[in-house]
Image 1 (cartoon, rainbow over the protein chains, first blue to last red):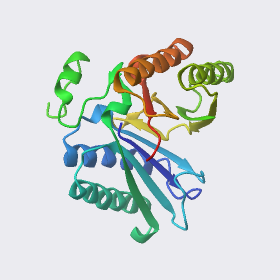
Image 2: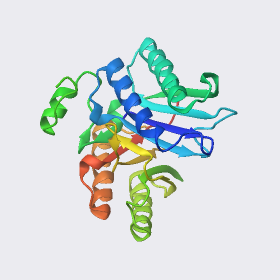
Image 3: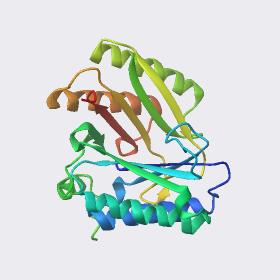
Length: 134
Length: 105
Protein backbone atom coordinates (compact mmCIF):
# COMPACT_ATOMS: atom_id res chain seq x y z
CA UNK A 1 0.00 0.00 0.00
CA UNK A 2 -0.33 2.37 -1.76
CA UNK A 3 -1.66 0.49 -4.76
CA UNK A 4 -1.94 2.47 -7.98
CA UNK A 5 -3.97 0.55 -10.57
CA UNK A 6 -4.03 1.96 -14.08
CA UNK A 7 -6.66 0.81 -16.57
CA UNK A 8 -6.22 1.93 -20.18
CA UNK A 9 -7.65 1.45 -23.63
CA UNK A 10 -5.97 -1.34 -25.60
CA UNK A 11 -2.52 -0.26 -26.72
CA UNK A 12 -2.77 3.17 -25.11
CA UNK A 13 0.15 2.50 -22.75
CA UNK A 14 3.09 0.64 -24.30
CA UNK A 15 5.28 -1.82 -22.42
CA UNK A 16 8.09 0.71 -22.81
CA UNK A 17 6.06 3.45 -21.13
CA UNK A 18 4.93 1.35 -18.16
CA UNK A 19 8.24 1.25 -16.22
CA UNK A 20 8.70 4.99 -16.80
CA UNK A 21 5.24 5.78 -15.47
CA UNK A 22 5.74 3.33 -12.58
CA UNK A 23 8.99 5.08 -11.69
CA UNK A 24 7.20 8.43 -11.77
CA UNK A 25 4.30 7.13 -9.68
CA UNK A 26 6.77 5.82 -7.09
CA UNK A 27 8.81 9.03 -7.05
CA UNK A 28 5.78 11.31 -6.91
CA UNK A 29 4.10 9.36 -4.13
CA UNK A 30 7.28 9.30 -2.05
CA UNK A 31 8.12 12.95 -2.71
CA UNK A 32 4.64 14.13 -1.77
CA UNK A 33 4.00 11.87 1.23
CA UNK A 34 7.47 10.96 2.51
CA UNK A 35 6.52 7.27 2.33
CA UNK A 36 9.24 4.74 1.52
CA UNK A 37 9.25 3.40 -2.06
CA UNK A 38 9.07 -0.20 -0.83
CA UNK A 39 5.37 0.30 -0.18
CA UNK A 40 4.47 1.61 -3.65
CA UNK A 41 2.78 -0.79 -6.08
CA UNK A 42 1.92 0.35 -9.64
CA UNK A 43 -0.03 -2.12 -11.78
CA UNK A 44 -1.31 -1.71 -15.36
CA UNK A 45 -4.27 -3.43 -17.01
CA UNK A 46 -6.10 -2.93 -20.31
CA UNK A 47 -9.81 -2.75 -21.06
CA UNK A 48 -10.62 -3.95 -17.57
CA UNK A 49 -13.81 -3.22 -15.69
CA UNK A 50 -12.08 -1.33 -12.91
CA UNK A 51 -11.27 1.40 -12.61
CA UNK A 52 -13.91 2.26 -15.24
CA UNK A 53 -12.60 4.22 -18.21
CA UNK A 54 -15.81 6.26 -18.63
CA UNK A 55 -14.69 7.60 -21.99
CA UNK A 56 -11.10 8.28 -20.92
CA UNK A 57 -8.08 6.65 -22.55
CA UNK A 58 -6.49 5.88 -19.20
CA UNK A 59 -7.66 6.02 -15.60
CA UNK A 60 -5.39 5.66 -12.58
CA UNK A 61 -6.93 4.63 -9.27
CA UNK A 62 -4.84 5.07 -6.14
CA UNK A 63 -5.62 3.25 -2.90
CA UNK A 64 -3.55 5.20 -0.42
CA UNK A 65 -3.20 5.22 3.32
CA UNK A 66 -5.63 7.56 5.04
CA UNK A 67 -4.59 10.86 6.62
CA UNK A 68 -3.02 12.40 3.53
CA UNK A 69 -4.10 16.01 3.09
CA UNK A 70 -6.30 17.27 0.27
CA UNK A 71 -3.32 19.26 -1.00
CA UNK A 72 -1.15 16.14 -1.09
CA UNK A 73 -3.84 14.24 -2.98
CA UNK A 74 -4.31 17.07 -5.46
CA UNK A 75 -0.56 17.18 -6.13
CA UNK A 76 -0.38 13.41 -6.56
CA UNK A 77 -3.27 13.48 -9.04
CA UNK A 78 -1.89 16.41 -11.05
CA UNK A 79 1.64 15.01 -11.33
CA UNK A 80 0.65 11.40 -12.05
CA UNK A 81 -1.85 12.41 -14.74
CA UNK A 82 0.87 14.51 -16.33
CA UNK A 83 3.31 11.58 -16.22
CA UNK A 84 0.89 9.28 -18.02
CA UNK A 85 0.21 11.94 -20.63
CA UNK A 86 3.92 12.66 -21.13
CA UNK A 87 4.99 9.03 -21.52
CA UNK A 88 2.07 7.94 -23.72
CA UNK A 89 1.10 10.97 -25.77
CA UNK A 90 -2.46 10.70 -24.46
CA UNK A 91 -4.04 14.15 -24.09
CA UNK A 92 -4.07 15.24 -20.47
CA UNK A 93 -7.85 15.59 -20.40
CA UNK A 94 -8.16 11.96 -21.53
CA UNK A 95 -6.31 10.78 -18.42
CA UNK A 96 -8.50 10.33 -15.36
CA UNK A 97 -7.48 9.73 -11.81
CA UNK A 98 -8.98 9.35 -8.38
CA UNK A 99 -7.81 8.18 -4.98
CA UNK A 100 -9.43 6.43 -2.04
CA UNK A 101 -8.28 6.43 1.56
CA UNK A 102 -7.54 3.12 3.27
CA UNK A 103 -6.84 3.17 7.02
CA UNK A 104 -3.33 1.85 7.63
CA UNK A 105 -4.75 -0.43 10.32
CA UNK A 106 -6.78 -2.30 7.68
CA UNK A 107 -3.69 -3.38 5.73
CA UNK A 108 -0.98 -5.96 6.35
CA UNK A 109 2.35 -5.89 4.55
CA UNK A 110 5.71 -7.45 5.29
CA UNK A 111 4.15 -9.66 7.93
CA UNK A 112 2.52 -7.01 10.10
CA UNK A 113 -0.14 -4.33 10.14
CA UNK A 114 0.98 -1.32 8.15
CA UNK A 115 2.35 1.68 10.03
CA UNK A 116 0.50 4.97 10.03
CA UNK A 117 1.90 7.57 7.61
CA UNK A 118 5.06 9.07 9.10
CA UNK A 119 5.63 6.12 11.42
CA UNK A 120 7.41 3.83 8.96
CA UNK A 121 10.94 3.98 10.42
CA UNK A 122 10.43 1.21 12.98
CA UNK A 123 8.67 -0.98 10.40
CA UNK A 124 11.55 -0.52 8.00
CA UNK A 125 14.12 -1.21 10.70
CA UNK A 126 12.37 -4.45 11.65
CA UNK A 127 12.44 -5.48 8.02
CA UNK A 128 16.06 -4.41 7.58
CA UNK A 129 15.18 -2.11 4.72
CA UNK A 130 16.72 1.30 4.09
CA UNK A 131 14.38 4.23 4.53
CA UNK A 132 13.39 6.44 1.61
CA UNK A 133 15.82 9.09 2.74
CA UNK A 134 18.81 6.75 2.52
CA UNK B 1 -21.02 -13.64 0.06
CA UNK B 2 -17.85 -11.93 1.17
CA UNK B 3 -16.19 -9.99 -1.62
CA UNK B 4 -12.53 -10.88 -2.05
CA UNK B 5 -10.28 -9.31 -4.69
CA UNK B 6 -7.02 -11.06 -5.49
CA UNK B 7 -4.51 -9.23 -7.67
CA UNK B 8 -1.59 -11.39 -8.75
CA UNK B 9 1.23 -11.19 -11.26
CA UNK B 10 0.49 -13.27 -14.38
CA UNK B 11 2.46 -16.48 -14.63
CA UNK B 12 3.52 -16.54 -10.99
CA UNK B 13 0.70 -18.69 -9.61
CA UNK B 14 -0.22 -21.98 -11.26
CA UNK B 15 -3.86 -22.87 -11.99
CA UNK B 16 -3.66 -25.64 -9.39
CA UNK B 17 -2.44 -23.22 -6.74
CA UNK B 18 -5.12 -20.72 -7.74
CA UNK B 19 -7.77 -23.39 -7.22
CA UNK B 20 -6.45 -24.18 -3.74
CA UNK B 21 -6.18 -20.48 -2.83
CA UNK B 22 -9.76 -19.84 -3.91
CA UNK B 23 -11.01 -22.73 -1.77
CA UNK B 24 -8.89 -21.76 1.22
CA UNK B 25 -9.86 -18.08 1.05
CA UNK B 26 -13.52 -18.99 0.86
CA UNK B 27 -13.18 -21.31 3.85
CA UNK B 28 -11.34 -18.54 5.69
CA UNK B 29 -14.16 -16.07 4.95
CA UNK B 30 -16.72 -18.57 6.20
CA UNK B 31 -14.80 -19.07 9.46
CA UNK B 32 -14.17 -15.36 9.97
CA UNK B 33 -17.40 -13.83 8.71
CA UNK B 34 -19.90 -16.67 8.43
CA UNK B 35 -20.16 -16.50 4.64
CA UNK B 36 -18.10 -17.95 1.78
CA UNK B 37 -16.05 -15.62 -0.40
CA UNK B 38 -16.92 -14.44 -3.88
CA UNK B 39 -13.45 -14.18 -5.38
CA UNK B 40 -12.51 -11.77 -8.12
CA UNK B 41 -9.17 -13.03 -9.46
CA UNK B 42 -7.18 -10.54 -11.46
CA UNK B 43 -3.83 -11.29 -13.11
CA UNK B 44 -1.64 -8.33 -13.96
CA UNK B 45 -0.08 -8.98 -17.38
CA UNK B 46 3.64 -9.65 -17.59
CA UNK B 47 5.79 -6.50 -17.63
CA UNK B 48 2.86 -4.57 -16.17
CA UNK B 49 3.36 -4.84 -12.42
CA UNK B 50 5.88 -2.81 -10.43
CA UNK B 51 6.75 -2.56 -6.75
CA UNK B 52 9.19 0.16 -5.70
CA UNK B 53 9.49 0.83 -9.45
CA UNK B 54 10.92 -2.66 -10.08
CA UNK B 55 9.18 -5.67 -11.64
CA UNK B 56 6.72 -6.88 -9.04
CA UNK B 57 6.24 -10.30 -7.48
CA UNK B 58 3.60 -8.94 -5.11
CA UNK B 59 0.05 -10.14 -4.63
CA UNK B 60 -2.74 -8.08 -3.09
CA UNK B 61 -5.62 -9.81 -1.28
CA UNK B 62 -8.46 -7.54 -0.26
CA UNK B 63 -11.46 -8.88 1.62
CA UNK B 64 -14.53 -6.84 2.54
CA UNK B 65 -15.84 -7.78 5.98
CA UNK B 66 -19.59 -7.91 6.56
CA UNK B 67 -19.27 -6.34 10.01
CA UNK B 68 -16.98 -3.84 11.75
CA UNK B 69 -13.92 -5.78 12.86
CA UNK B 70 -12.19 -4.86 16.14
CA UNK B 71 -8.53 -4.09 15.45
CA UNK B 72 -6.96 -6.94 17.49
CA UNK B 73 -9.21 -9.41 15.65
CA UNK B 74 -8.44 -7.77 12.31
CA UNK B 75 -4.69 -8.06 12.90
CA UNK B 76 -5.04 -11.75 13.69
CA UNK B 77 -7.25 -12.35 10.65
CA UNK B 78 -4.87 -10.45 8.36
CA UNK B 79 -1.98 -12.56 9.60
CA UNK B 80 -3.96 -15.77 9.07
CA UNK B 81 -5.06 -14.72 5.58
CA UNK B 82 -1.55 -13.76 4.46
CA UNK B 83 -0.01 -16.90 5.96
CA UNK B 84 -2.62 -18.99 4.17
CA UNK B 85 -1.47 -17.30 0.96
CA UNK B 86 2.24 -17.84 1.43
CA UNK B 87 1.76 -21.48 2.46
CA UNK B 88 0.25 -22.21 -0.93
CA UNK B 89 2.37 -19.89 -3.08
CA UNK B 90 5.73 -20.40 -1.31
CA UNK B 91 6.26 -16.65 -1.57
CA UNK B 92 7.54 -14.54 1.30
CA UNK B 93 5.50 -12.30 3.58
CA UNK B 94 7.20 -9.35 1.88
CA UNK B 95 5.40 -10.31 -1.34
CA UNK B 96 1.85 -10.25 -0.08
CA UNK B 97 -0.36 -7.35 0.94
CA UNK B 98 -3.56 -8.16 2.78
CA UNK B 99 -6.48 -5.84 3.41
CA UNK B 100 -9.61 -6.52 5.47
CA UNK B 101 -11.96 -3.58 5.20
CA UNK B 102 -15.01 -2.72 7.28
CA UNK B 103 -18.41 -2.23 5.65
CA UNK B 104 -18.82 1.22 4.15
CA UNK B 105 -20.93 3.52 6.30
